[in-house]
Length: 106
Image (cartoon, rainbow, N blue to C red; front, side, top):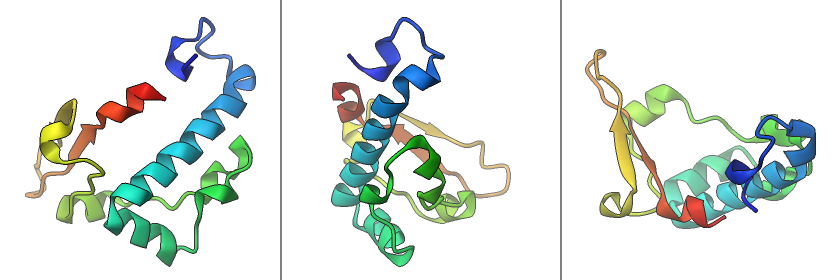
C-alpha cells in the first residue's frame, strides 16, 4: 500500500519506515535519471544510502529556488510529466515543477 492511500494519513509514527524508504527510492531514481541532480548530490558528498531514518532527512542537499529559476531539473522529458506548474515569474524568472508519472507506481 502506498503512503497516500493509508487510512490514517497523519500517522507519522506508523508510516515513517515507508516514508523513508520512498524518499530514498525517489532521491536515487532522480539522481539516476537527471545528471545535473546527480552532480548536486555528488558535490555535497551525499548518497541516498545515508538516509536510515526520518531523523536523517535533513542530510538531503536542498536545491535552492534561485537555482531552479536558472535551470530546470527533470528526470523525465517534459512531455512525459503528468502535469507541469510554473511560478508566477514576478522576479523575472520562472521556476518549473512537474509531477513524474512513475511517482504513482511506488
